[in-house]
Length: 375
Image (tube, rainbow, N blue to C red; front, side, top):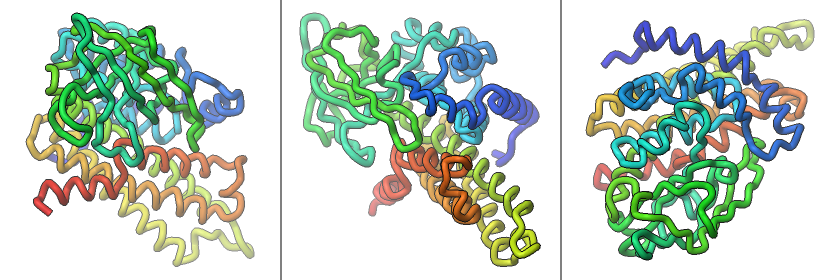
């Protein structure tokens, strides 16, 4: 598979780049933060995403979507990252859709996602560092299940219409088997969410399930076999987060290079200093290697290749490292003003930090690769 976009994907990239830059630039994020917006994104913008066809990108044409793949979703996510645009695109149109594909729940939720009326959140993590432990209980109750436990770091969880919930129907918290995935509507009784502001000004919720009753139809896939749809969700989410990080790192890099070409010190443009040129060249090389890793992971996912898991971990780890370098170099090369709220470069550092942790950081994925290789 060639590591470049085809003509159609390139056209989509240009369309997404222009659309997001016009409708959701960094100033859009800044205005939501300054207004102390309690939703975390613009629902009007989400409807515009739907009008562009973005929300149904991974949904098959037979179900009203565009029938495209992770490569195409990635170009939209890169545009979102470059502009730091608050959006439920990753959690809803990428991760949740991937989990719901092929399930009975797809028919219920896909129309709302396609129309931009539905937002989904991922109630997966229970502890720090995206560990695999799933201890939240799902006990048989009547013709369905009763969910008891808590989830944290649920992006958009306080306003989502749909929660994708991983719970334990058998075994111990660390077991691979015995996990079941559920589609839980927002109006379920005994469900509460408390939103908290993250370092990048986005909102994530801590969600309590105090005996939330769901019927058997809420199960995504099979009981005790939730690792399959959960695996689809995580592969899609990790690759999508990596693509968004490419946008964050690329946006920070471009901003920094522009500054190096304009800023003068002692009458000389600082970009003429060889030491800064070497650092900029190193950063460019790291970002390009990460870009290749992300595209490879996207292509393998779209092809249903068995090597996708390893490629996804490589992509998530490498973009985390490269984007961290991009934002750190950006702040440092901007000097003192890089630490001020007036300049946007600091926002890139904060968003890069959140995305690096989301769905597992570089150390998590290095460990995943090592374990898969038998170490």
